[in-house]
Image (cartoon, rainbow, N blue to C red):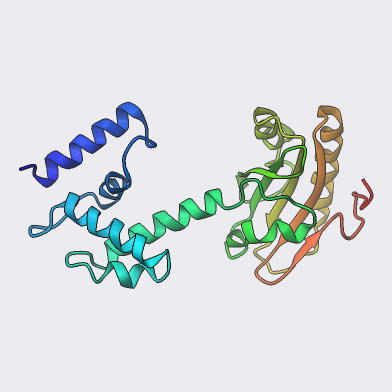
Amino acid sequence: MYTNKIIKLDVREKTMEYGVSFPFDEELIMLILGSGTKDLPVNQMAHKIVEVLDASGGKDVVPHLMQIKGVGESKALAIAAALELGRRRNMHHRIRVITPKDILPFVRNYAISNKEHFLVITLNGNHEIIQIHVVSVGSVSRAVIQPREIFMEAIRESASAMILCHNHPSGNCQPSDEDIATTKVLLEASKILGIRLLDHIIIDCQEYYSFMENDLLFSRTE
């Protein structure tokens, strides 16, 4: 009979050789858990966790997982956190953006940060979201944000358009002079590269400011 250590090494070796998309769901859970308990080996614990996840339908995951003997708060939170990360990273794919509010559900988690996060949302020709990229953490001054950083992912993904977004930890969504100056530079660069820059959205915990909706540098009819 395999021990926890042997099973874990076997799954890790397969994953390292073939990639993270290769393992079954139970094996992915094993990688997250790291180990089981004396009475419940990691493979058996992973099997029970998958059963609970299937039965719960993604609701109240932590308390349901903690009903499994040997799964405490730390392991239950680790599983729940992995599920939430996967949801956040994939829920926006192919969502069509028609108004600035369509972006908000996918960037709200950055609003509570005490540091400014500068995001680039890449879009295809139908204005469906390709990906959301964090290109800078900290100041949004022009010394930090460079056009090459902003457009690198858009070019790599063959994006047709993009939207800028960043949070204001101060709680005031009004654009600063630096925000406006930076946006002007990036707007000119977008015209040269042929990747349409549709808007720049500033968010905080309660509100948002859209350059386009306020007719600042962008036109609603473009």
